[in-house]
Image 1 (cartoon, helix red, strand yellow):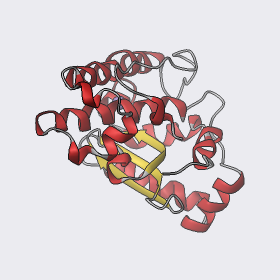
Image 2 (cartoon, helix red, strand yellow):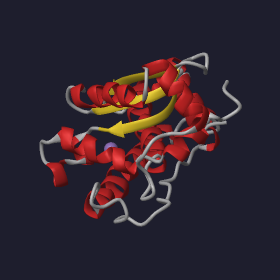
Image 3 (tube, helix red, strand yellow):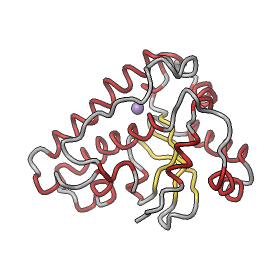
Image 4 (cartoon, helix red, strand yellow):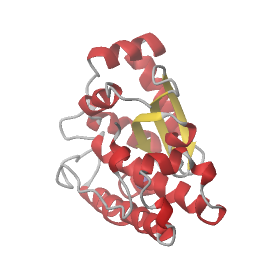
Length: 214
Ligand code: MN3
């Protein structure tokens, strides 16, 4: 059971679990305010608008809408990919950040990261490299592969969710300019470096340890 499995139409903008300014100095309150209150809210509104006249799709979870996107009506497919992806990606993004974040992962997630990438610093390098080299707008991800066992680092363009490839996203960084431009301008690398200080590894481990992976 992942966090998108309980989300259905009409979709709602989730509240943040923390005040806007608590991720400072790494991410400023003004960026959080616009990012959550305008950008994320916009994806939710457009996703609802796309599904408004499709009652048979309104009972589908966000997970199923994205995983089964090939079966969506052609006229709303792109809108669901973009805005459903935007809703899923940002819902995760707020939760994998915390004012108590940073540091290293622990437990079975840490063991798997070491096994897969040859150590935490090698993982960070690979992930940051994906984030730095996304051309234009997109996301870098740590996800579980289709079998739910193997960890994978990669990136997606635009608001494409790893769910489109049947991957389970565990950790994602938004590298759209709206995520950092007010504070970091064109210095995406500085934003990525600062972002590690707010990563909520407890939440990432919780997602990794979710028992039901279908
Ligand atoms: Mn964003």
